[in-house]
Length: 198
Length: 209
Length: 188
Image 1 (cartoon, chains in turn yellow, green, red):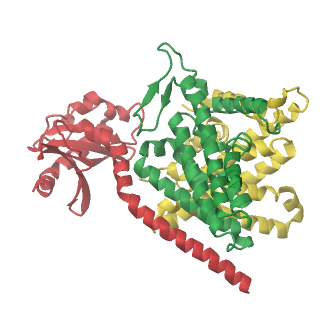
Image 2 (tube, each protein chain N blue to C red):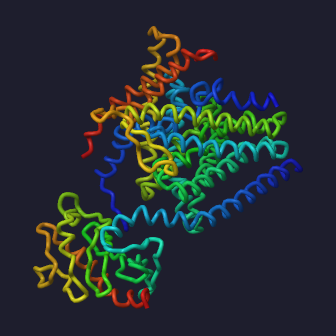
């Protein structure tokens, strides 16, 4: 069945991925780096760019792999293996290119790239594309929007966490613990967006 | 022998994931909505980490350094696919509830972490690697189940046991209990985990975060 | 040179062994998985359209070739004897195919229908989900004229959802057309 997507469908997809079903705060994808790099704003921004770029490319790449390789060969059950290989190879490739083309960029962003390979958000979004049975273009948009959503949550979080340095927090609750509690409260505020799409 | 016991027990408290060893958080938050989900997810991950530790440990002297991450990924992904098929075939309810988080085990930092940091090291023999994987996996299972034991009774008023023990959720709260459904939703998960982590730090003997 | 050779050999060997094991596991788990998938998606509809059976329609399912199309038939039996069948049919709706599960007894009488999947307009076309309306198909048979009353047929139309209700009527009609052939091929 050929589904035709209208502009409002795409808008809904983007709003859904960024705000309502935020990939990090609601879908729980990408939490490890979330807590690790959100202590300072510049690391958060670096990671954000990395995620948006890798995700926007990996989504379509894995979609192509599934549609033109796995399905015709009837090995869709090997999706997990195929996807992680595509992502890992792609990230390795990007890292090599950046190193050669712009050492400055590599120094700024390069360290995040291996971390991104094991980022649940990347792999997770690629799998979601398949489970939701998106066509190529919606998959691309969803991947991009997912990256945006992740970055939004990460940057908000980093902004708040930077202020923790000035707050007096009881010992055992420092660092990760208060981080998680804050994430919960931020996530709660995202629920306000649920009414945006009927 | 004492060493084996040490490696095993460190995963159960001193370095318990994800509290002490802050890795592999995604499934902890997503899969602790019911006790069976939490416990089941933990078992799946334990299966993967133990099996991959075994294979990687057996091959540790053979796998060349430059391609080791690629090899680890292939080996880990194989076991993830196996557990995916097995759950879809024999515990379909769990498979549907855990959803994308079963394939996500392949990027779980715990699994890759143990492969890289422990199983592939020449000095760690096979029994040690098995103990390490088993300890970490069971520790993870314990954490997940503990979190679920808060989120489900208070969030839904029930406890769900594995289907081969008891079909369907068991009411554990008094009849007029209004479930604190916030706990079942994502923000509640974060909050719960954060509080648990804080308390664990309070009573823990390990270094404070 | 030797290093690279070793890299390639080890990597390839691992991939081959893993792929082989995966293929084995896939074989072993294929049957239970297909049963589970069917049960999860189709069983509610199957249960809605069959009555008085004591077997497992999903476990007893058979595939039948009708004009080159494979139709999966879920038989209802009582004490080992066939009492009816459930099978799927399809109608062309406003937003795409409308998937319908039919339950028919041994004389060609409709036990009931269940609309499983559709892409009709919410609030307008999705009134075909109305159980009351679906129930009025009960008792129809291979002799029924499966077009809308407005066209001289026996199927009640839904006001404002002509295209959607026609899709269902069409689908049911097509399903009933193949009934005799299906019955012969399954129950012999």
